[in-house]
Image 1 (spheres, rainbow over the protein chains, first blue to last red):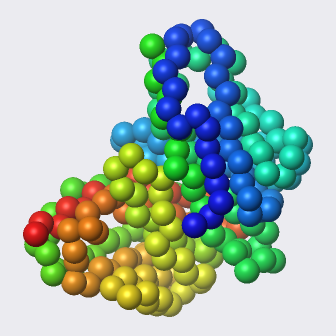
Image 2 (image 1 turned 180 degrees about the vertical axis):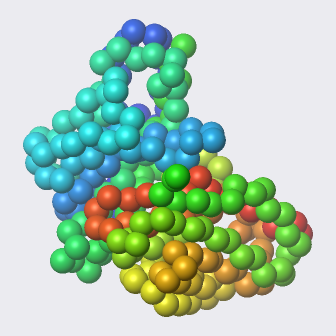
Length: 116
Length: 109
């Protein structure tokens, strides 16, 4: 199994509070992603990173920010959580196309967030 | 038009049946094709990975890619109750990934 750890795994919070989800990898992969998964929508990309301090927006980035200060850590922050951000959040990693893992995407176990 | 289309099912089969799961896509630049299995309340687990066209077999699972038709398939032989899960197809042209919405499969003992 790919070494991806997400924390917290479960969180309940109130509308308007800040929330940070953490993703930690031990694979030294270059790319890291944050997805959310909702019924009827499947997996949707929030933000991704292609290196330390290099990030870009995905399909559903409004209301979210990210940071990557080390290769192994990718943080997702909800500055002011809303009920529409209740979801399951997955971190994923992939490596450069020049490596033996080229093209493969590995997921963490997910972080279930409920915003009341 | 979505990049990737997948029939959501649900699909229910008796134990031992052959299961066929399929996805179609629109972007001819996709080179990497994946199938994931996701159990309830778990993360997607990479099941099969194929680069470019052709078939790949791993135990009871066979993945097929037909780039000319923009069509990929996953076959499960001798299906087991433990195969009951949601199956997601995914594809990529590098480090941008596109997913189907998943097919829910139940294998009845």
